Image 1 (cartoon, rainbow, N blue to C red):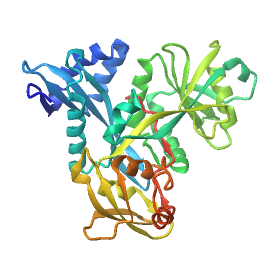
Image 2: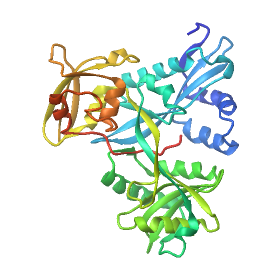
Image 3: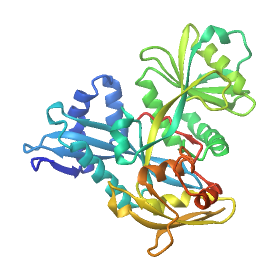
Length: 374
């Protein structure tokens, strides 16, 4: 990469300097959405930037933190978003430099993994990212659900967010091992995100008790996002959403829960990458004690490369470098990520029989539920 660019982490007070580049590259985002993003997201995120010789920001990468359930524990996952380069400065290695620096900082800080929604898999796969979550989608004719039993629905307000957060956490803990923890603050930010897309958070109620929720958006047609219903109420979700949406003839369903009874297609949506193997391993468990040794090859973050001894039991896992141990197999950073998130089987990874038998006892970080936009 040319010496004429300075690659560095911006101080929080400098984050606003990236707004011009954001608006020029992501011109499809509305003014309201950009205002929301810079009011809510940039007050807590980290932004890496490339500056030219005149001090102008010509490329950037944002890390937006999310408190996550990652297998057996809670951890902060960094969502890589707003990766952008001024057109005249593209194809000069700026994105790779920003990505490498940001992931190196994550590794040093003990942050276990990064995730992103790629414009193209081919862009991020060479850097060790692998798909870990497929989003379930459907196109609905709403009148087909008319006249069916349904629950009362109303728009969520700030006073509802504590109860909504409690409902969501009970639900997700029961069904998933990796997800963004839906705290009251998470939902408060999401209220503003939906409003700038002319949408809402909608509660499904039975005698005042929350039995489910969904998000709406109306830019480019009606959308129902992340529809979730308590067990026993799944069949009421779509009829309730159809009744709430009223005169809209069609709606696009995005991020449907796996228990929702509707014909769907699955679209690969979220890629992830382990940034610190030793910290990541704590989220893996095993029904009975497991121990195996393997070699990790991480070309982007060579400090991660080496021979590791992995141990896990019902309390959690550990992964430590250990020279001289007998190595059962070798994996790349991408392969380890896919194995750990359950999107790659031991057979697909080419693990030998002894290692495959041991890995079969491991509870990975799957199933995954990640529908975050920014």
